[in-house]
Length: 83
Image (cartoon, rainbow, N blue to C red; front, side, top):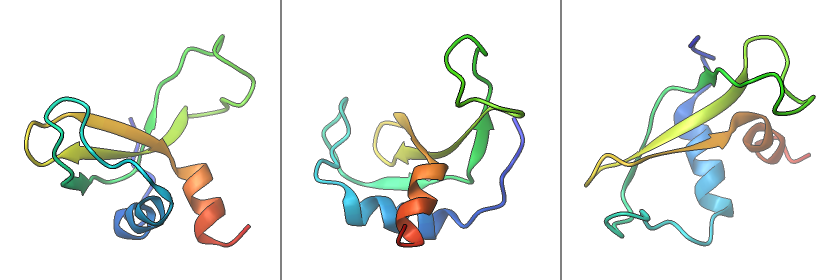
């Protein structure tokens, strides 16, 4: 998986500004660490929106239990830029 080089703090703040539920589904804590955005390999049969290197995502890791969730950087960038 390749790195995207986008600022995880900006993307994380954009997500935090839009999220209404922030609790971990496993431990119910609400402290997350934004990791470096990455491309996730996706089966090409999943949909036509996947092109090239895969799906660009921002991984968030629960500080308590380590659960990992991912959010589309494409959508977060769209909201961060006001589009």
